Length: 357
Image (cartoon, rainbow, N blue to C red; front, side):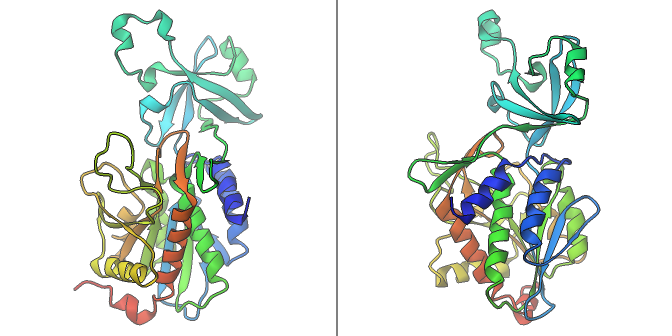
C-alpha cells in the first residue's frame, strides 16, 4: 500500500458512528497535528489551521468524520439486541451483515438477523423486512448473558468491513466511505499545500454528527468564521444497472455541485472551480440535484451569519449508506488536485469578488 491507501484504510476501518467519533477523531488528529494548529468546537469537530502567506481570506475545508451505524436500544430476555439507526439506513442492506458493538469491556461481534425464510408465510416472504423486526445476535441465550458480556443500552454499533483493494488495483471497497473519503481528500490536500505557497489561511475541519442533522457543520463554522468554504463529500455515482443515463460515474473525475437539495451553489465560485478544472485538464462531473433527499454540511455552512460562498466537491462513490462502498483511486486523486489548484487562486481580491450583490 502507498501512503494514500494507508490513509484510506486507517480512516475507513476506524469506528466512528454519529456521536461516538472518538476512534476516528484520534486518527485524524494524528495526521492533522503534523500540518497545523489543532482546535475544536464543543461537539468534537476538529479544526486544523494551516497558515499561508496571509491571514485572510479564511478558507474552510469541511468533511464529516461520522459514519452511519446503530446504537443498542434494548436487550431482550432471550439475549437478542434490538437496535436503533444512527443515520439513514435502507432496510434492504442490513440483513446478515456483521457488526461490532463497542462496550465498556471491549468489542463484541454480532450479526443482524430476522426470522429465517423457512418459517415465513407466503405473504411474509413478499414483504421487505423492516428494521423493527430485526435483531442482533451475539450468541447469547439470556438477557443476563448479554449484559455480562458488557452490552448496555446506548452502546454504539459499527459495521464490520475491511478496506480492500479490488482487482486491477485502482478501485477500493470499504465501509464509512461517506464521508471518510472527504476527510482523506482534505488531509491529502493540506499535506500537498505544506510544500506549496497559498495566499490565504486554510482551516481543515472534520465535523461530527453530520448524518443525524448536520450538527458539527453548524458548530464548527462558528469556530472558523470562513470567507469561503468547500464541503468535501462522497458523491452518489449512478453508473449502475437499470439506470439508462447515469448522472455521475466512477472514473469520471470529481463531482461539482451546481445545486443540491439544501443549497444553490454560489455562481461565481462555481465558475471559478470549473475554470480551474478546465485549465488544469481535470475532468469534472456536474451535479444539479434539488429534488433528491439528502443533506450535507454545505446546507448550514453557506447560511452562516451573513452568508459564506460555498461549494461541494465529491469523488463519485457507489453503494453509500451500506456496509460497503466502491470508489476509484483516479477520482480521489483528481479531487485532491482540483481542490489544491483552486485554493492557490483564492487571494483576498478573488474571494471578495465571490460575493453576490
